[in-house]
Length: 250
Image 1 (cartoon, rainbow, N blue to C red):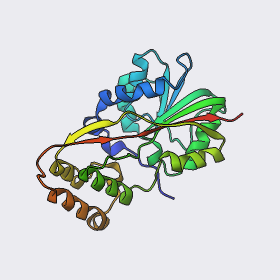
Image 2: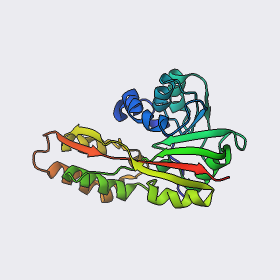
Image 3: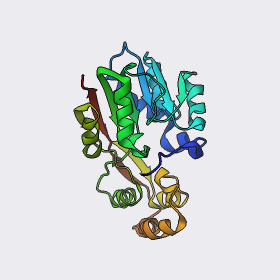
Image 4: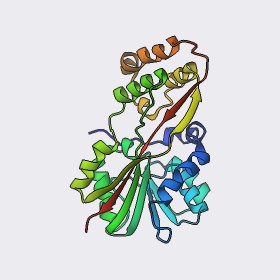
């Protein structure tokens, strides 16, 4: 079984390369409109706290956990000390503690997805709600996007899209009550910029890829990016993510 990914190596550059607080404010409404504004929220895998900050700015009460101490240091600076350094697969809370929880871009880096989902189910009260924004991306049909999708397929071990996690969640008492999509995000980069980022291992699922595997699975696709027509011309792409809402069965 794969290990959960600890994002501590990315703590100093994560926000700069992932959109930071602006990205958090773009995602937070999807959580807010699917949860009760008067009840405490558990951010199960809060990272640097950008989503939690946006929710707190709208008047919500949030506590959170994350596996990475370095990422939590950034979160504390944003939302204060209502955080715990813990894994999704071993939550430091008693049974039936929360009415609602959410995870944004988390389950694709959890080594044991079933155990992580079971832990969320354990700490939720019957009827409690768990909102998930998967980390795995749904790509458009741009040539650049097709190459990026193939890289994701070759190097990501844990698919957390609805088709994968819904059956697992049902085994641990979480029923899917909504499977939808968020508004597409727009990106503008040149193929050469994307190729540079891949060679610098900016994607989390390339951190643990050794050089031999990178040369075999990724390098040929990097060369395809560089070989596209006008590799220095910006390309506008639209990527989509799902949103899945679970309720704990009582």
